[in-house]
Length: 90
Image (cartoon, rainbow, N blue to C red):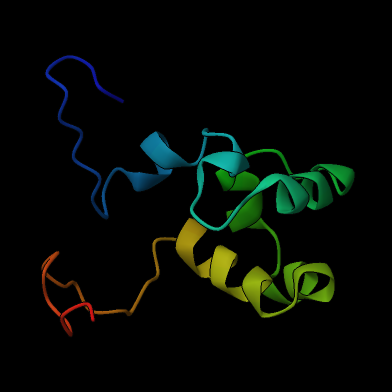
């Protein structure tokens, strides 16, 4: 996604075109074990995750299945924060 100028804009109009074809393993929180569990069920891309019922994903991934479904569909209600926002490290 670094072409042509190393900047990629992903927004509500283009996320399906740009993100859904990517491998599921490119998502945050999708490590080796989750990738394996998804592949065993024929889920290979972020678009595959988006297309499945959230309850189905939750049946084998627990609450993370619901979270991945939301993320794959561009639904994240967590606030955007500055990098340094939050409590200082102790």
